[in-house]
Every structure is written in C-alpha cells, then in structure tokens.
Image (cartoon, rainbow, N blue to C red; front, top):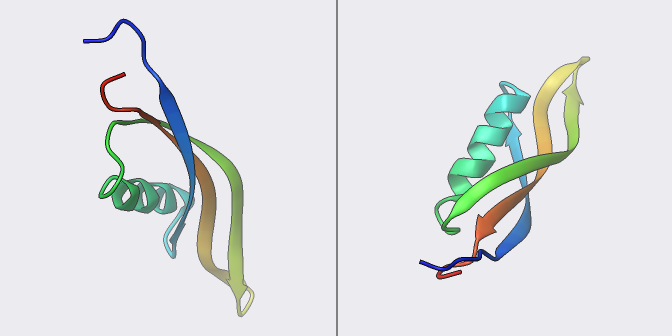
Length: 71
C-alpha cells in the first residue's frame, strides 16, 4: 500500500427522463463499467430539454474523480 495517492478526473454527461438524481446515477453506473477506483463526483452543469412545454429529459455534466491504480 502506498503512503500517497494520485487521482484523475474525467468529465461525463448523464441524462434521464425521470430526474437529475437519475441522470447522476445513470452516468456513474455507466462510467463504472470502464473506470476503476471511482471515489467522488462533482456536478458542474445541469440542463434539460423541453418538449411541448414540459421537461423532456434532464442532463448533468459531471466530473468523476478516481484513484490511479497502485498510487
């Protein structure tokens, strides 16, 4: 075990027709399929699409932090 850690952040975008929280959950679940050691996220943008005067879907831009392996 190392006495220091090194991290990296990637930017991802999640979407959902249900909610902002669901958009976050979807993005983290998909990102976790290819990124290991995820440890935190930050939502940097929130937006959505309007269809017929109603919310069509929610979209969040996120940064996900993960620890570099063996650091």
